[in-house]
Figure 1: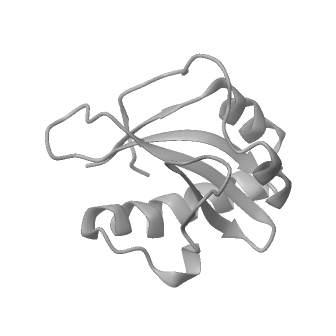
Figure 2: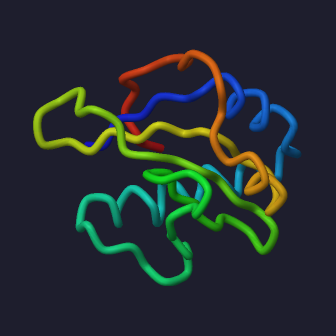
Length: 112
């Protein structure tokens, strides 16, 4: 089961989403992103790709104008992918895709 941690900026971004946007983000992560992490093959609809100005950071599309940036972190449990969430909002986050500062809660499992 994948685990995750969030940067403070991600947490702040998430709180600024509307309730409908948060539900949609959560649904895409649980129903598409997590299963694809397990197989190692991302479906085209997630539009996973590297962020040019931030090596090792990826973006995922969770709505027509909904984006999230993330990277792989050090495994918490052997064999389980660990994700670091950096930002989430609209396409505009790609101007500053990586959150600065310390990481907030770490080691949580990516489940519904």
